Image 1 (cartoon, helix red, strand yellow):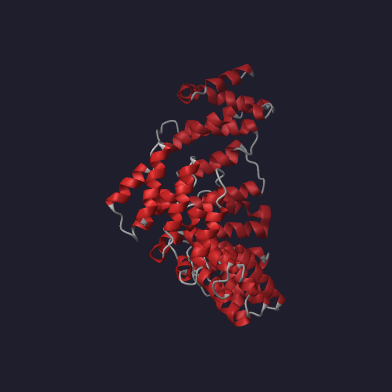
Image 2: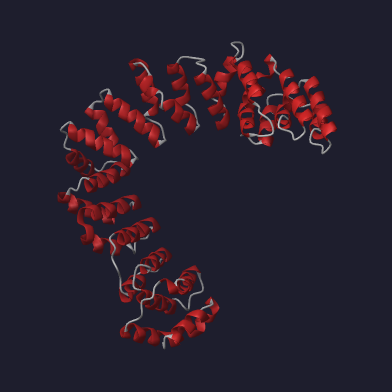
Length: 443
């Protein structure tokens, strides 16, 4: 449903509002039912379409007499000069179906008949291109259900709208069109920014015959799903997709095409392209570096570990996060000293955040040793990076009882060695509970 104030504003931009109507609109909000009923009756007599949003509200008033007066007033407004106001208000009328004080089916059906009248239906068609998405949907559905125009024309109009729901409804009708009309519709839908619509049009084109040249263009679509479909059908047609992706990388195409070529070689498991893909780890473009990591994991599995560790130091937060995500995916566990060495070689906050996240998969006590080390390392800093370390220690304490694992003698020794240096810093982070827990264990 359109917001009441927004609906008033939109109708007021089409029809000028008078002072008399303003006064009656205020009275129609009165706590007194008799005053509301009198105001609603007066609004109906004036016939100003600016009152339509308020009349729709009063059609669901808690006083029956006000509801009946509002319906009579709405019927009086059904005039040729007010059609645009009814088109704008159509979603608000449909919202009345959800209201339970009274059944509004008769009122809604009457408004639909009014808008479907051959004298006014052109306004309904224009409403499909309305700036408001709710108006677009309501007008499209009403026009479709009542066959106001040929399906082919309605589908093309629907596919050109800004509202994704309207475009999706139109795309669902493409398969039922005649071949000549279908090609026109798919030509629009295949360029849609919304992937499901673009994919539907792509699959329709494939079903009815699509040249391999056009299929090759979709090897570089931004949607993984569409690229996978293109690869499948090109392979069925006997096309060497791996060679196409290699060729793209060899001639230094756009960054977008290079990125999807790296993805494609990883997706297809082309291990012979390992060296070529690895060369992009040092690319100047973060998107290529990020995609390279994913493809290397697809090709090499655990053997891509060195590249992932190196990328934790990447200057791009997105590449660093992707590296951490892939390490977690490979289920690799770290010791405290290994993670600490990564932190010591980097000054970036996103590297620290990634390592703190990786530490969560480590042994409970190894994680504590790592957090104590970075807290010591950063204790002289009073910034967001140091706060990350302190917050991670608090989180460790909160999750203390989630694991019953006990520390090894070596871990106890390591923790004891670190505690004296940073006990004073704990109070500032509310870590007394941690110290108590460690003392209880004899640490």
